[in-house]
Image (cartoon, rainbow, N blue to C red; front, side, top):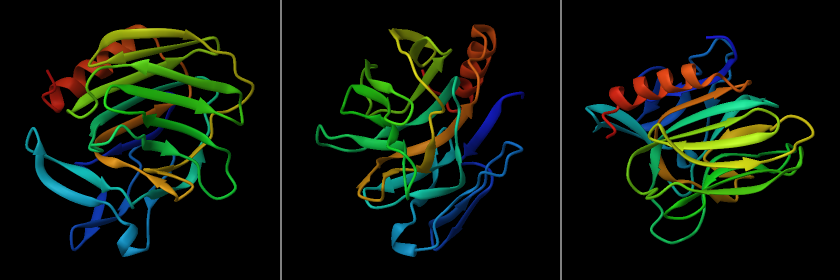
Length: 214
């Protein structure tokens, strides 16, 4: 589909050794594969977890580097997964690494998600989506002026946001390899455009059905 820049799905293109994921291949046409050569830093592939399908599980010290950052200015993001952190601390979904700027998408705690982009002036924006510790579909759409957030296909909140450049994200599951995700991921899609509500709803319906999320 036009505008799809990154597509990671736990049921395709996942390469693991002794249960540890060393490569998660991008299913878009852009080849932004997510890799980690260090075994102790590799997330776990857990089979038969969500509607009979595998998930990729991060235990709080793992991450996967994208071969090149995804850098949308306007964007639509879909995440199927859950936060496993028991404490009310943040759990990184997409974040920075190396010399790339401090931009993040994260589960902020047991009921919020947070978007922030220090490089493009995307001010820290929090949305109350409900229980993050159960499997859910998080969707977010930004058209250059408004950030709209959805959970399981249902509208949650709308935020007026002004940015000044791309929202650059370099790795899955970590903030500069210092703060990490504790959570499961089943599917992650990033578009470099604010797709129409019709297309967004169609994708949400497909993901909800595929992963049997009520």
